[in-house]
Image 1 (spheres, one colour):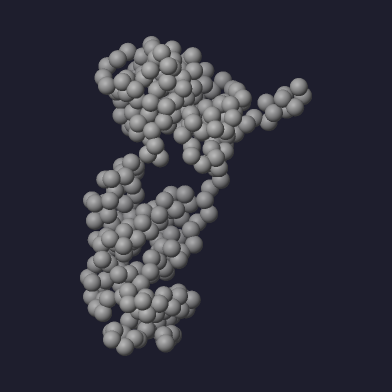
Image 2 (cartoon, rainbow, N blue to C red):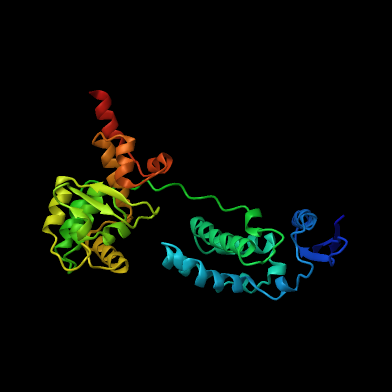
Length: 327
């Protein structure tokens, strides 16, 4: 049986099993101590815990995160963004906590501190990285942790899905401002984003060899979900591609960061606030439905494999629905 003792302002949990050394850990909350004790007893009964916990004492969370950054993250499509999050976590004091003392209380303290600085969605993504890192360490790297403490912590509530669409006149102002921009490729990228619903990475990854002007399609090989798809091209999208000069293997020979900076400058010149480049994808999907396409057809274009996620990108205008009802 586990023993739970009050030690001044903390609670100490101790678990004893024959054939194993005594395991002790201190918590700020009694409920955390009881939870750890139950999980530890279960692992001991399964024979899952090592007889010596010195390995956990000699490694910190930073050790796992750095190994995760070098061995796991490079295989991911969003490697740059995840590496940035890892650098943020490594600068936090939680990175120096030993695995032996990495409790739900430590994770909760990290959560609360980060919530005072950044939005809830950012904290959710950071905790997801830590959770996956610990799972890899438990399942593949031989670190026999009693549990994954991130899984026991309540995540902050996710923000409501964005419903931002392009307001009347905004697209015209953006395209007009492009005439004062040195980025001659920017109008084509914006028009294709609205006409095809492609993501930024998909637009910049389009290759000339995958564009079929006769069939009016473009094959996207590298997508977010890992499944290639063929996107049909509208007449306007087809004309944009035809008018784009060839200067390399890809249709647009610019980097994602260059597009991000150009978009921010363009918004300021056009006086358009609160519109993200990804909102153009929301606009495109909503327009597809307004044109009368059904769910399978829109999903084929956008690449959504789950209709529930597709509907998060769909923001019909109430006035358009009212006009249909009146007819």
